[in-house]
Length: 392
Image (cartoon, rainbow, N blue to C red):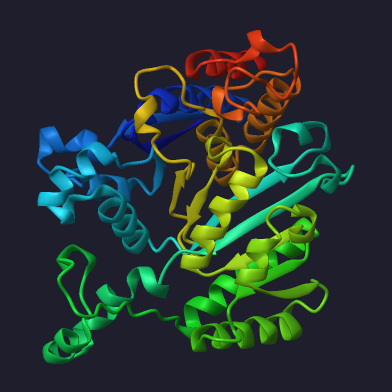
């Protein structure tokens, strides 16, 4: 039996409560592939601040990068963002931790699958008749580097200080709100776009799905650049993969007719961030979102559900652990433990097919379920975790 060490970030808010079950599910399921997981805690976020005086302690950062596989429970809490974070904006952990890890580890590809099952159509926020009998598979692959999220940090060093000052090019932590103008630099590089697009096409080819490329090429120069590269690679290297181009605004309008976005969906950092969150809402709940960020060259990866930390539910046994548990399945598949990954996915699907829910998945709040008569099947974090473990 082989052993794999995982850097564990328990997270803020309800993160630790959810990650307990995600770790147990991943560890138990991994045994189906003769894989033993060892979790090494690398504290980050506000949960780390009290002890270390930093939301991204240097030791945690370096150790997580060294391990190369991170199971990330989510960071951020408005209670601290608006107090300590207001005094020390550089400490706000969502930007401080996530952007630093993505950049240091070269995490170019962000996978966010949204799977619609016909028998679970009642769980979604779309009309059931819009889901075909064979279901829908949307695999959102977000370009996780460059773009507007990294532009100022990456490029302002090449611009004279007086120009930056005149144009208002500055880092987010230095914004005061008193400026006359603030500018974000957004950019793409040919080599990173080509690497990303080839990976997206290859995934679509293996999955037997079309590639849907999202852009704003009718307005923005960087997206005209994007579309030309996508078109060229598709024509020359992947002629048998159907390719569709979609403007980001029309893609937004299609989120609630999900069959029209059946495929592998390639999108930039900012557009992918926004659209994939909307897709999770259409699927039924942000608590169901699973996510991975991968360096296609080194295999380094971070697995984070993308569902937030649910700070208002902390300690109440109400947060939905399913997104974290499914993210654990993505981690297992990345590590080659395909039997364990499938076991987790099947257990989650079975639990939902049996009518069990957490409060966020009820049609009109926990007092009214989409399945009438299933009032006793609204479960807490712990109970849903235990149920899924029992079904592995």
